[in-house]
Image: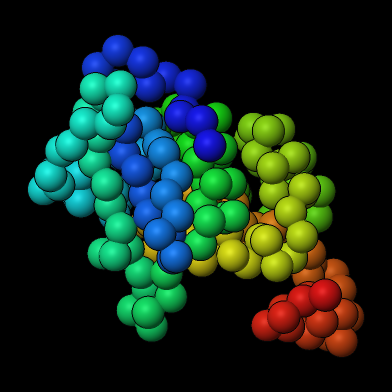
Length: 168
């Protein structure tokens, strides 16, 4: 997996570990700009250098929910994509109540609408969980807005299927 685009020079890379010792790189100032958890951890972390001499910080086992749920690779990779797009600028949360079921009308940034619309429900649930672990409130709000858009105006049986713990 390649490093984020802006890692050259002396930019510090934060490597965030997922379950099973898989790590995903983030440019520090990007992830610190949107993640309260990483912002807190970066200030006290031990710095290391990678094979190219770039400063880096590895954050791993401290990142899990109170129930022991840990970060997983696929949603962590998607979060890295979202963080790179927003480049440390935390976007506004979607308006509540939702204006529409169409995420392009809900999101200020069309990229965000395309991003969540491309996810399966399972991917969406995992993204929300991982964003919650990382303390990225605006991404959690975006994911929850997508779920709200899915259930808005649906009959109760359809809502039950959408909110099922293991969606198909």
